[in-house]
Image (cartoon, rainbow, N blue to C red; front, side, top):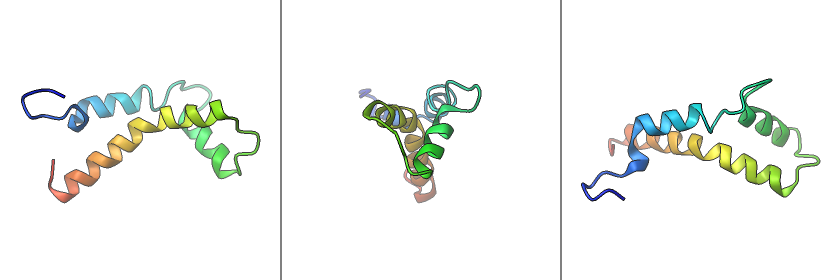
Length: 77
């Protein structure tokens, strides 16, 4: 963590860029996270451990964004 008291996970530009890159890539034929979420919503039939790990890795930036929005609404960031 930076010593100036700022938490890097509270930096909006970093989180938004992470969502636009890691959170969505690869983009074609559809954003990867969207395909994984549709797969889970459809019952996750045939998903293996690597698919779940992939969902977690592509979902972390979105969870960080939701966290920032929550903190902003609560007036903590």
